[in-house]
Image (cartoon, rainbow, N blue to C red; front, side, top):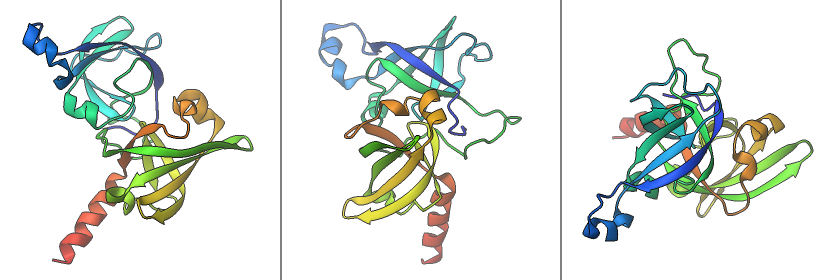
Length: 213
């Protein structure tokens, strides 16, 4: 469980195939998952153990090795095809799993990416930035004005919802602090982002659907 409050911007420094080294398996490496090696800021991993959960761009991953400032995760082919930003080296939003004693600064986040969405525009307005994202049809019903959404692991507030033929377009105000402490500042028109809808909204939809039966 997570909160959507990013605790560090880390770096994916190496990506390796998980395929066995035989010739046949090597030729079919595109069918296999990857091992990601991530470098973190000093001291970030001091309270982390093997088997702990860390979210990368909003996707919950299990720590499979630790060495100093570096940790590794194994990500399946299935997860790679349904997430964005985990198949290449570079900066990544990281958040360690929530502890029972922690403050819930964002909202309840599972770390399970629902879908990949498209950035329509990312423009500066005054001191802040307006991020607009196209939400796929299957998840448009879960987005509401002043509701919560997770984009690349960051808990954000929806400022506007506009329904359209493809689902809906949401507008989000990004303040300078968020830009400074996450990777969202690297987004641009056409960027792919990981989307997780509000868990509460998901349960409300299920309850309402059940009552109609």
